[in-house]
Length: 109
View 1 (cartoon, one colour):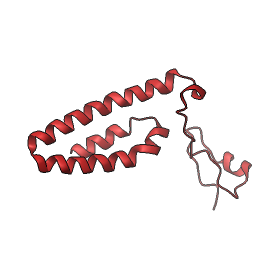
View 2: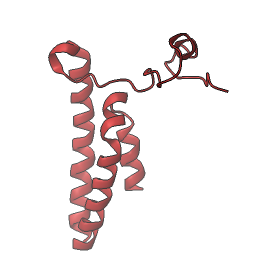
View 3: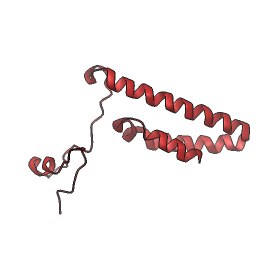
């Protein structure tokens, strides 16, 4: 249950941040959960409460930084891999396949 809540909260991060860091964050959280669980119930509950509350706080800070500062100043604009054209695919073909949400429909079939 705790891991499901943690994974759901990770989805609240901006897409570029979540894409870059969520897998590492999930692995670190699961490892720490196991370690704290071995130490006892009180340690586990204290750890989970601390982690979940700080995750909510950090998500808010990340969105605030993303929305209130210029990309060139904050240096937090990671490349959007959904829009990067693969090698060997023509520009017109690749970008014609983007829908309004930024998702790519298969242009190669």
